[in-house]
Length: 80
Image (cartoon, rainbow, N blue to C red; front, side, top):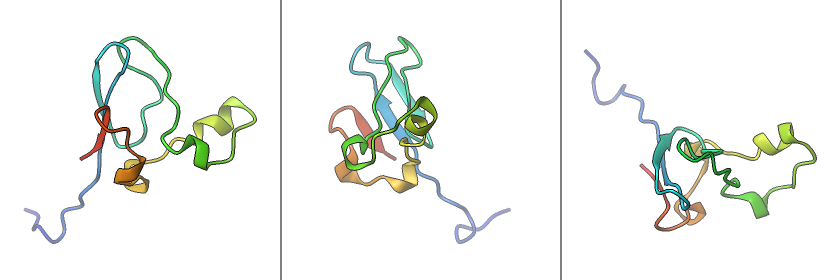
């Protein structure tokens, strides 16, 4: 039995694909649609240093706990 004081709360990102409408949820930014495979850019893409290769590009994606409401694309993404 766990008490409310010891329960760890983790944020999730819920995202709707703007191409096919598929809903996805994850604890970190979603890199591509699970239905149509449409790739997505990181939410803070323009505020970060541009990656030189694919490994550095993957590091631009954040965890849900690192994002804020102003980072969200209204109507397509939510932190829950």
